[in-house]
Length: 140
Length: 140
DNA sequence: CCGTATCCACCATGATACTG
DNA sequence: CAGTATCATGGTGGATACGG
Image (cartoon, rainbow over all chains, first blue to last red; front, top):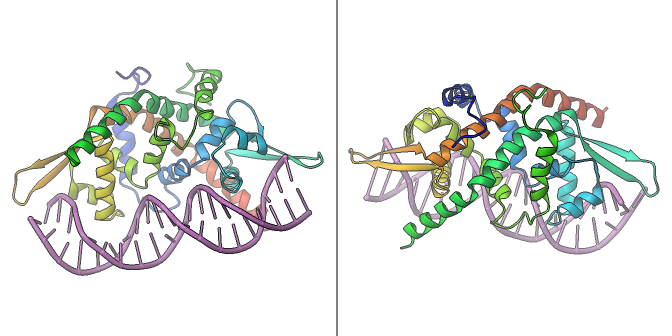
C-alpha cells in the first residue's frame, strides 16, 4: 500500500489537516487556498514541470506545451513570477530573448508536486474505472 | 531544505516529469489534468481533508466548511463519489441521514495531499512576501 | 435533513489580430 | 521573439426557492 509514506502515520496527517479545515477558507491568508488555486490554474503546474530540468525560453515552453495559447502562457508565467515560483530574465539579444527559470521556492515544490503526480499516475486506472461504474449506475 | 524527500534525488523528480510534459494535456487520459482539475475545484480538497478523520454527514460538512453553499457541496460530493474518492451511505432514519466517507482510494491520497499542504504552510510567508515585492515593482 | 431546480454573475481561457 | 489588446464564451460557483 503506502510505500513512500510509511514514516508518517495517518493520525499525523489527520492532525495536520485539522488546523486547516477549521479556518476561513476564503481569505487570502489561507495557504490551502493560495496554493490550490494556483495549482488549479490550468497550466501552472505543467509550466513548473517543464522548468524542472532547466530554464526555458518563451518559445520553448510553447513547444513543450503545445495546447497552450500565448496569452494563457503569459498569464500563467506572470502569476508564477508574482508568487516567486519562477524568475524572468530578459537577455539583450535582438530580438530579445526571455528566459524563465525556477526559483529556490519553485524548486522546493518539485518534490511535493512529484508525490502528487505519482499518486495520480498510479491511481488513474482506478479512478477511470470508478467513473465508468458510476455512470452505468446512473444510466442503467 | 528538503527534509522529507532526501531519498528522492532531483533528477528522479525531473525524470518523472519528463513523461508528462510531453503528452497531450487536454485529453481525459491525462492523469495530471484528471487529478489537478479535481484539486482545482474550489472545495474538493477541503472536503477530503474534512473526511480524513472519520465519516461525516452532510450537515456536518456544512458546519466544518462554513463558506460552502449546499449546492456546491452537493456537486463536489458527487464528483468525488464519481471518482471513487468517497462513498455515500444513506441511513434509513427519518428524515434520512447521509454519511460520506473516504474510500481506500481516498485515504491513499491523504499522504500526497498532506505533503503539498505542508509545503504550502511552510512557504506561504515566502509567497506573500514575493507578491508584495512584485506589486511594488509594478506600481512604484 | 438532504438535497434539486433555476437563474445569474463572474472569471478563466481561447481566438485572433497587432506591436516593439 | 515575446509579448499586448480585444473580444468571445463556457463553465464554476453562489443565491434563492422548493421538494421528499
